[in-house]
Length: 143
Image (cartoon, rainbow, N blue to C red):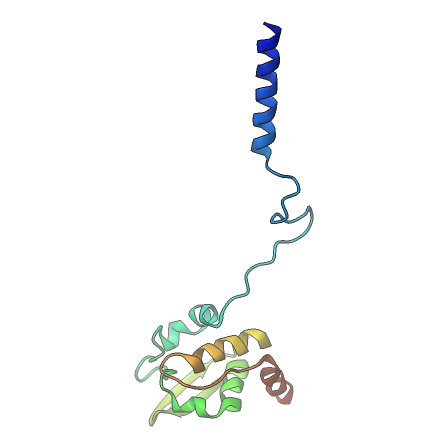
């Protein structure tokens, strides 16, 4: 009977230890150490901040919000970066059509502005290059 009780106790201890996991598992954060959130992609930022007006396909809303897809407005990178960080109101012309309205300044840091504009320039039928955080910072510092 003692052997059975001893075997049962050992089995319970082994089960308990196995279910606790490896305390030295390197994939777990140590106590008090914050878990870093995944850095949002340019597409993520676009979906969160731009899609409501410019739409998922970047074609905007005729008469209300200008397109970013195949947009001639993007040819002037400095003006485009400034538009995102400073916003604008009034009349602008995109692809030969006039839009009158307000775009609020986007509350994004330099890395986020660079990421979202790199996404816009590289997608939505556009063929522009990357935008760097340094370019965004230089334009932000100008204004």
